[in-house]
Amino acid sequence: MNEDRFGFSLMRTKLAMYEPIKSTDDDGVHQWREKKDIESASSLQISSSYYRPYLPPDKERLVSLDVFRGLTVALMILVDDVGGIFPAINHSPWDGVTLADFVMPFFLFIVGVSLPFAYKNLSCKYAATRKALLRSLKLFVLGLFLQGGFIHGLNNLTYGIDVDKIRIMGILQRIAIAYLVAALCEIWFKGNHNVTSELSMIKKYKFHWLMAFVITTTYMSLLYGLYVPDWEYQISTQDQGSTTFLVQCGIRGNTGPGCNAVGMLDRMLLGMHHLYRKPVYARTKQCSIYSPRNGPLPPDAPSWCQAPFDPEGLLSSLMATVTCLVGLHYGHIIIHFKDHKKRLNQWILRSFCLLMLGLAFDLFGMHLNKPLYTLSYVCVTAGASGFLFSAIYLMVDVYGYKRASLVLQWMGIHALPIYVLIACNLVFLIIHGFYWKKPINNLLHLIGIGK
Image (spheres, helix red, strand yellow):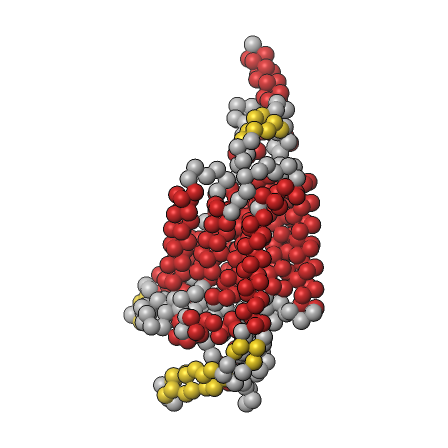
């Protein structure tokens, strides 16, 4: 009797795997489709536990999103901790890219990929807009706290910052801006017609592409069209007092460290005292005798070597939103195409085109440059992001190798807490706060951290 009941239940479950199901897409159009996405996974689930309820493809969480995000967090921790020892993976001093220069685009890309899921079914556009604004504001304020100068580092137990010198921009601030722009595009600038092909999907989201074009055109016009005059800055030291340096520019369209429009706009709009005071170009050959490591200035060092420069400045952050919009398009492919092969083919084709376009730009003089966030850098890093995401999706969501990525998946789900506690050294600062008699007698110094 029990065997007959089991056999009937098993047969009914198998039949359910191939029944057509009715669903509603984001356009409100009902369509019939087969449960192809989890056909193989369902057969494995029946053999192990026939009482487990069936989940349709739309309800399953894409593990590759979390794994990609977790891998990005792991890369960030790696380059932050090891980059000083191995300059080959540290940020490039100026032109060119290294492993560390892919971390920020990876974050922006996966933010974009995730957005179509967050705003797939909108009951009220105004409520969604308010939610996006609030999330962006929270992220921006958190970035001010972590990277604005309030925390003074591992070897200093003091805290606090003069608001006249607080750093305004930063990593989380850039992500907040890109997230807000992409979220508003997804909420307000989305067509109402059906998606039946790749061309119809492009038409549905044509205003997204228009936004990316407007941002890129504005960035290119300002970068190559603005005139950069001579400027000066001061450095204060206890021994010599204040020293003024004059940077002679009087040029237009320069993409070098001292006379580019990105830095000029940040100095004008944010103010010199609100910029990052440890510029990445201090490791260039012009500014360090130990380049690509930090070191003493050469005798003939240019005057801009010690000038503040923010790698997450205003104009470069504007261009960074394009990476998020590219990720948004990859997320749309997931929403509108349910076949694994179609998804992968479209992702790989777009990634290849972006990569080739970026390399062509670099070949013709528009160098790959993260501090300026040049168009060539956007294309190459977005293409690399697409290839990496396709590989992770193929491994995790298609072939089902999920156990091997459990740690990265966990890191991706908890990406923000890990960034705050580990990447921003908050957990180490807390440990450092408990010492024996003298601040130097703490657990961190015992194991060699913070020396």
